[in-house]
Every structure is written in C-alpha cells, then in structure tokens.
Image (cartoon, rainbow, N blue to C red; front, side, top):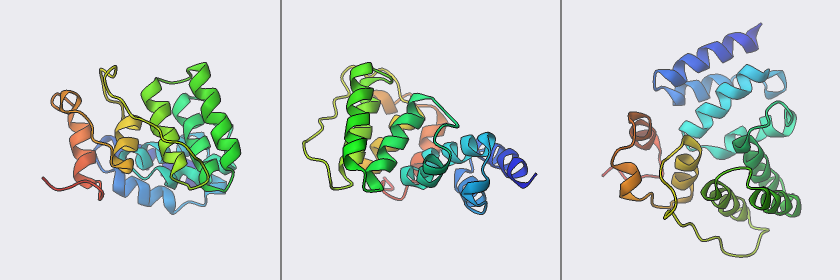
Length: 173
C-alpha cells in the first residue's frame, strides 16, 4: 500500500528532524489516497515547517479522520482560506467557548483565520498564562510573526530550535 509506505517513511523523517523532506514526500501522494497514518504524518510535517495551509486539502477531503483540537482548529483555518469565513468564525468561536484547546491555541488559530481577509476584529495574543510550548502554537506563532516570549524559548527542546532554523519567515539571528 503506497499510502502506508509513505506514512511510515514520513513518520521516520519527522522523528529524525527532517520535516521538510517528510512534507515533500507526503505531497507526492494524492491527498484523496491518504489514510489516517498518512494524515497524521502530513499534519506533523506541515506543523513542523510552519506550513499551516499545507494540510488544508487533507482537512477538506478527510475531515473526520481525526478529532483532536489541533485538527479541529486547522479545519477552521482551512475553511477561512476556502472562502467559508462565516463557518470558520462560528467554529472558532465555538472552540473558544467550549475550551476545546488552551486559549492561546484558539487565539492563534483565530488570528491566522482572520488573515484570510473575510473576518473582522483584532485578536490579541497574550502569553502571560502560557507555561509551555507545543508544536501547534510554535508553528502558528511563527507563521503569524508573533514573537514567542524568551521564557518559553530559553528551555525549549531541540525540536523547536530545529523548526525555527528551517522556518523561512524567521530571521537567522
């Protein structure tokens, strides 16, 4: 099964710190042929490379394959960029009210979705109550150009420094 092979290979590439290569590999597979493992591997590679919109074809074709908060937020972001701004705004408001994810993650997703152009209203990103990074918030913050506080980056694991090194939107120094 080519999708299974691609998923296994992409997972290994992600684990050894090669998400750019993993992303390239998953892009060679028609999204319609993705299985759950390949969706997971693709999602990890797109997040690690701060290429949030890269996962959009999978969210559209395989929307129910995952049910975790990051996937739901990604679906809302992708809806906004597919011209479904009202649906996206409603879903993100619901995510915020139901607290499906930490507030910082939902706010970052709202700001990203708002950048699609149809939404109105500013989203203030406050890191005061955030005690740790995760790949999702790190990726969104980088993609948005939102500075991550030093208190979170100072003791960040190597994953984040590797991701920062390959993120084209971040300065070299």
